Length: 151
Image (cartoon, rainbow, N blue to C red):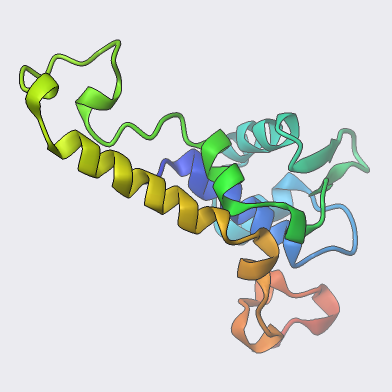
């Protein structure tokens, strides 16, 4: 199983915002911190805004911030809306399945169970759970400018 870049970047943005609750953050700042194309991040930010994870304030003085407390954002919820599908194998998609053994295959049930277990684990954790780190454990770009470590 491999998560899409959209889900990966969504989690990175949410983590960045979770450890910077003091105000608005620009997409440019997030782009530079992670070394990710701003153009790609804008699309992810728009999706996170549509799903109610972040507030997007347009304009020169605008930026992004969490729309809810990190403790109210389930990782399972984030994955469910940022991953386009969880079709681990072809037969999970009834519309495009061409596997000739699908009706008799026992593997599909096992993989369905594994997918459910994966999501159940993610449902147990919130953004607050994974954002809890001491400043010593965080890369400098996560720290407020006043607290960033020098060379």
